[in-house]
Length: 495
Ligand code: AHR
Image 1: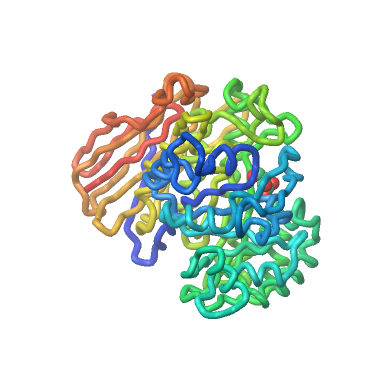
Image 2: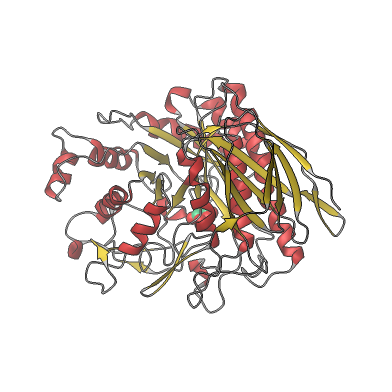
């Protein structure tokens, strides 16, 4: 019999609000993400609004998607936005050099994306082209999307059918500048960034612009240090971090058919996010103690081998309970670091990597990761309740990882939500949470789990993994005793 873990959850007046943008998504021109995913074209038999699938729009609205990053990824540094505006039949093509070498017809461009974001109620996050673009091109893009007055770019926008500007606040200055974005050194990129950022006027956008630097590759702390040291803080709204949970880049392993060893290694990579966020934050604190600059984890998630028989450049993979616990544990980390982590983008939204939605022609399924993000959406814009505990261990082959991860928040209606993940593949874990100071008395819960950790939602059986009512807890005079089953994600609500 394992000991009960005592979890302390307290209200703290100086605790941060969990920025809803932590629950953001990413749509790159990659495989079947945009074409054949979000976008089927307005002549498709699949019900759509201006070419965007209605079932996807509904699912993402239900998810309360707060923001969507586009058009890449690596693709962003090859993309020239002017190729994607104006009459569709006159648009030039682009060969997607990073992803499968396919020729795209540019039928999904700036108007399509920004109008889709309006339908979704999501903030657009546009990634500018630094690698193969120009300062003028990026500056023009902002004028095109944001300027209400008379100018060459706003006239062009109006000519293309859109009178009012969209007012885009979030702008990435390149992507993975250390790699596919130009193989730059941190020093060189910092110089490029300063130049681009200087000419990125907000063109009257009331919210201003949040300029986001292409961040480090996982634990490249020197990258963050160099950028923080060399970029004036008034030009820096956010700094990115990319981290994928990959076992081995040359041998990533199957997305569904994996062993416990592979599962353990994936979890080890996922939980590394705690160390990454802590260490990058410490560097940022040195130069920005008032935490003005946001940390933006604009690519994260599990990355496995592509599904057999699919194009290796399309990064299509299934999504099992491994992904659900990975998402739950990662989002707990972001919530608990909400003072600095103010945006994150799961890679990617539809049909690519750790997707929340998979499609097969007219069919669409919601993955276990979707259901975790939906359960966790209660944390969006809620006040963090700091949490403290010593996790029991999940052991495999002589190595250990913390088995439990948790975060908690109180929303503006006074509802308390505690999200709990047990990554242990065999053992349940018992926790006790003292809720007496939280001002709530009645509890209910939902759980995501299944018989086997390799279980997933298929097109034949799309409802295999869905959240169900969770009752395995007792409230003993404000002490909440919960037994968390192996590989499960639970959200408890107190009112
Ligand atoms: O998300 C897939 C790719 O991963 C992105 O294009 C790139 O930024 C990262 O390396």
